[in-house]
Length: 252
Image (cartoon, rainbow, N blue to C red; front, side, top):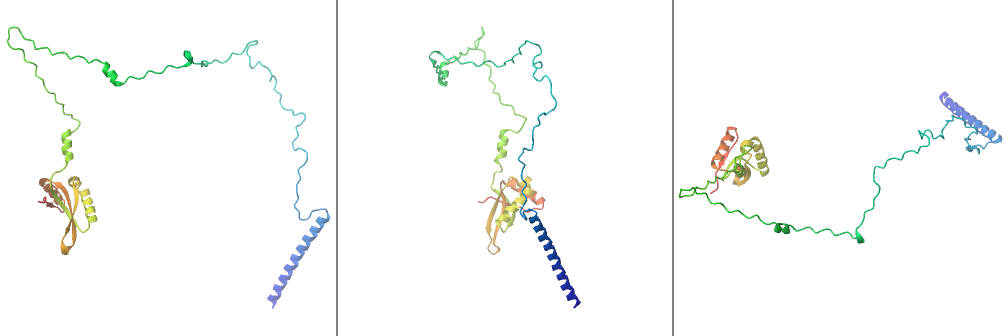
């Protein structure tokens, strides 16, 4: 019960305070209106009619003498200042020939006319071999020796380069794996060729499809072409490296 009375008392005091503040504001507003104010209207500041800055009659300041004297321009009296030197020549008007028509340029000579105008140099007849008096036969003609181009030491000859470019020739192949998928065959060949590039770098991969019936379809990974000796060397090298290799003879 006491708690409820305390709440009612608090509300009544709050209402009385608000009413008192409102009455004070209203009284102040009435006093402003009575004193000639405009109430709640905003105040407007008017600019003065006179200029804000006026130049004084006596500005004062430092007066520098001899500002209108020409002594600073002439070192000697009664002398005219030298004119600047002109480095470029004056403009000239081109002179036209009589009649005002320029001559047409000469047409260039065709190359055939220049070749035809040159006279060929006549060939001199070969002089016969001199015959020694008292001998019945003429002196033998000097032997003509055929000069061959010397072999350069800067690199191999052209013939050796052509032989190396021809690559291995033969129908032999080497089989290095047998897998169930063509994509696996390609990846297997790439892995083996990267691991054994010294013997498989020049070989061309061929995936031979074989149907083994109940065992399914297999792809034999083979490389070539090689001759029989080359195929044997490749297989022997791979076997020493613990890699599978089978010789495939050419088809007959």
